[in-house]
Image (cartoon, rainbow, N blue to C red):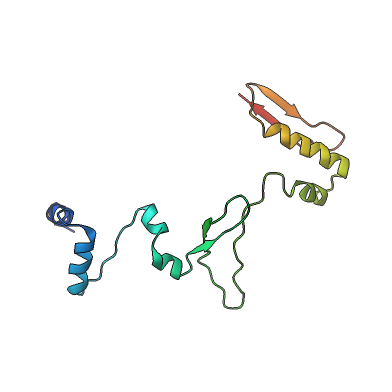
Length: 142
């Protein structure tokens, strides 16, 4: 640790003098264990990451050919669940509101409120759904 800075000053220019492929060959031939720090694009295109199941296909209508990172957790007694896309905005709203006890007319009001809230906000705009039930939506934009 005492000479780490000096060592970096020596090694950095040396490693920068040749392309990565050269150093991989030299280190492999010398039987030196090493690892390469990759940038995001290199990681995504690394064949080993795909062969090891790190990246999984996530095909759906809005994003064909998409990838996601697989869960690193494995439980011996349970089969891994394949990843799926996140729900679209409002896709499960009626079901969730129904489970919370809102009746269908209130669910329709909530859907209208969600459409209202997801449009471009205006300064100091306040919107609330009022009824005898608890407030469903409130947004304040400044």
